Image (cartoon, rainbow, N blue to C red; front, side):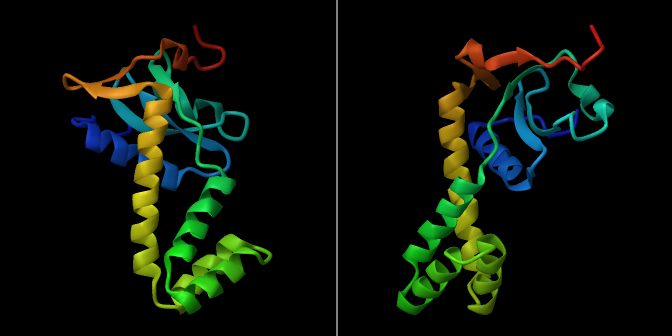
Length: 161
């Protein structure tokens, strides 16, 4: 087991938000209904096929990771919430080449990095809430459940029964 067993709905949302923050191109979050955790799974096409062995036979719900469009939208909403000059500067960097890197540099240069990361954490929390609702995942009677069984699958490692 790789994550911490979930003990509340708020923890479930927070853990998923944290996974959104830590996922990268060849990974995605899953809600493991067997172990009652949230974890990141590596796409076996891009990694060691044994990396996800611990999940073999578990019932999971694979969650679509945060895409670059949604990440950009989060930055844009933050930019628009800032006072005049800051808002303009942040909006400008979002329209330039390499907006993600430039945005990070701009919030650091403007001295508002702490505010940005708090804003982003809140946005990821809300996105996680929406994702759980979309997939039919809830926390009921001390357990993570999925009311939409079409989203639940048994994780099978290729070559294993």
